[in-house]
Image 1 (cartoon, helix red, strand yellow):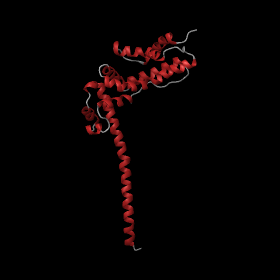
Image 2 (image 1 turned 180 degrees about the vertical axis):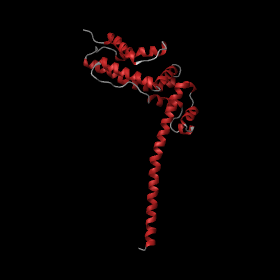
Image 3 (image 1 turned 90 degrees about the vertical axis):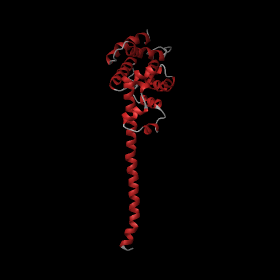
Image 4 (image 1 turned 60 degrees about the vertical axis):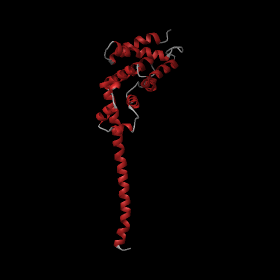
Length: 215
């Protein structure tokens, strides 16, 4: 084969490799951009929830804050409702702490939760959505399974304590969990106070006086 023919034979192969490389580059650079936009939208949603609340939040406002077009949002979420639910579900919940002691596990779990509450958007988003649920049945319905799933690690702490014999087998675990975390809601919504990890020890100690197995 002459040099010219060789060059002609090599050219298509080089062209194919170039096209393949471009496809890989488009794929590898496109995906991070998509993920970055997705996260920017969720972050913008959380920020606006804390600033203006659910009712005043709009897809247009989220798009402007995130630096994307409204079409980019609507390709992922049909309305602001599923967008808000997904953004909320990404926030911290109770961690599953298991050191073999009900008192320790409760205190450590609550302490970590309150630290997250004060250092993330949870501190502004949770009160906003909690207030909205009271008069928005559609939001409440979608948020409920998310809230329950986030609370499960806390319930499992009580289930393990019951299995170890720390609490009586007839203790209502859901009620016990509410008894421990209830003061947090009271402080937040009724007393207008701030939540501090310092409140954890006395809160748990007082609650366990009525929960722990006696004798």
